[in-house]
Image (cartoon, rainbow, N blue to C red; front, side, top):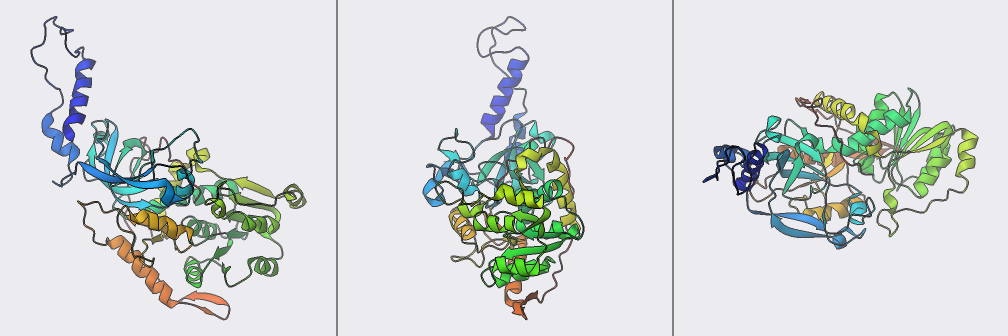
Length: 460
């Protein structure tokens, strides 16, 4: 695998000093008898091997072969050659990949109509560097662990530009939660929420991948936080995040609860559901209220991708309350990304940020292991069964299929939380005090080009 890359680099080097393929030597005027590569071929093991492990010649990946919001219909598993990294690239052996609601939007071709199938699926991954180009080796080496956000993560191996990779201290799926889900909540609330201490914040789908962060950041700002969810277990999880009022909308009427308990209205809404929930959020806004739209998952599986919304009276309602509706799309806030990711990683390192992951241990069919499990994981997310960020352990053939300590811990936390969450006197409690040991994190490279082009954002 290393020879084509090094040969290509060697040929470029020769051309750069005046050599050319065939003909007369440009410097001496003598027809060359033999050509010598400048690249030292003895480095091939360093560039394309990790701790002596064997990189296979082929791998599995998920490819969108038909545009459809039905993920199973649009995507197929294919066996292809393991790609070779270019000069400024890393070859990452994926250990975990993140599942996003917008995986369906992508498979339906809604982001860029000019892109036609086939194209690679998946956006987030974390794993070890097992190969890299010469320029990339100035910042990375074999064995480094990195997280990234870019197309083609649903694969056993992915080529990632070095400048778009995020160095992380270990292969923990928690780091995946920060790249898009955490960054969306952090920047949206900071730039568009204008949060002030004592204000009331409503987070819809609060126990999901991005909702969990919106709850925590709003609490850190000194706000009173309401979080909607679909089960007592999720309500207990929100309570553990210090959410002031979890609302299980399957057991309580959301509209009546908001009207009765918050008659003055809601100051800020972090909204990702759309449709009737968005309508309710608009009707619940307080004077000078701000509603941030970060997605509308209730419509993604439809042909249009957009849920029905009765917005005929929206201008009147906003005018009467001097309120506003604000849309948030991460690529429009690239200047904020570096600071957001650095800040969140430091909070996580100090034990001040919960990054809940759901590896599917309680899902039908069990834990999400292997690339084929992505299909189940997408179904699981859209069934609303996840608690936190949904991740799949890719576990390619050369990597042990054993459960990693990170997901073991997450699994144990959720099982224990589920067994001890109950409803008492109309309130949700979780009889549990989690002890999260701080993780030593060094945010390296944040000023050296790693974040020159932040990842494409998703609505999750």
